[in-house]
Image (cartoon, rainbow, N blue to C red; front, top):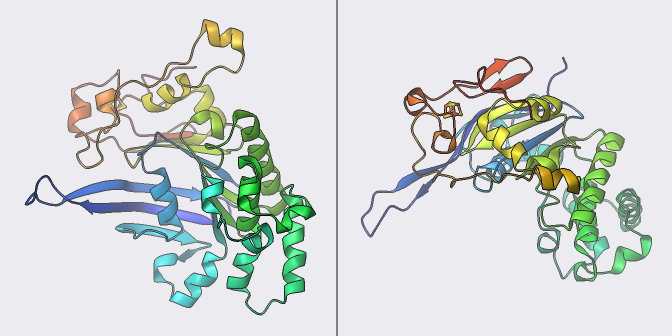
Amino acid sequence: MSEPILSVRDLCVYFEVSGDGWFGARKVLRAVDGVSFDLARSETLGIVGESGCGKSTLARAVLGLVRVTSGEVRFAGQDLARLDPEKLREQRRHLQIIFQDPLSSLDPRMNVGQIIAEPLRSFFPRMNSQQRQLKVADIMRHVGLLPEHINRYPHEFSGGQAQRIGIARALILHPEVVVCDEPVSALDVSIKAQIVNLLADLQAEFGLSLLFIAHDLASVRHVSHRVMVLYLGKVMELAPWDEIYRAPRHPYTQALIQAIPPADPKRARANPARPLGGELPSPIAPPSGCVFRTRCPYAIERCAQETPVLRRIGESFVACHLAEQILQPV
Ligand code: SF4
């Protein structure tokens, strides 16, 4: 197997937060807690979990946008933390992000051409304006924007079109890895599929490696080669996409799948989605042992005492003491 383009090992991102009252001791919020994974070239890894489970912090840590407490992020074999500032800046060119809310992530004072060209100005200051214009026109065509859009401003676009501008901006430097941070969650249902299909097409065309973040399993189903399920900053399950949907092994993955409404209205009436019950515990005071135990229907005494390690079962990696016993086809 060839070397992964991205390799993350035991990544932890902890934040200190103030304690209770004036003199309360400061507490530690474990946003990302010992996450490891590889991303192969031209692979899409879906990263799924409820709000507050650490997905976006993980993405930002991979991109070097938040301080990492411990662990390692290797891009193309190089440990990003050990690079000198100039080398790190050069590598950052190959790691880009598409944000969740397209309109608020675009500078309202800049027109489309200026927004998309901005990374070129930053990384290639000697590029002349004609070369820039050619590159901007080319990437606009790839993302389905029209040439006449170039002088318009973000507020003149719908959410879906604005996301196309964000995608063009992320891809203008021809990065190797793109983090898609919930790129469709702010969009209407009808537009979501268009943007997901566009990202899949662009991935195939440019050979991109994608980290595709979503809070539900339905959004990553059609784009991911593998899916990683996060809960309170920890990996619960990591498996090829067909395994995740056909034979989810972790109770949390099973609950996320049961929360997906069936696409067929008849099936939806007969077998409605079952939203996940209970509250996500605070990452400042996570449950002992298995962090999912307070919401797990299978929890036993051992689950409160012993933290399950992520272990291989068939094609999947699962962090559950009972993973072999509670496999449920869905
Ligand atoms: Fe549930 Fe225990 Fe498995 Fe955690 S380790 S998911 S509490 S059965």
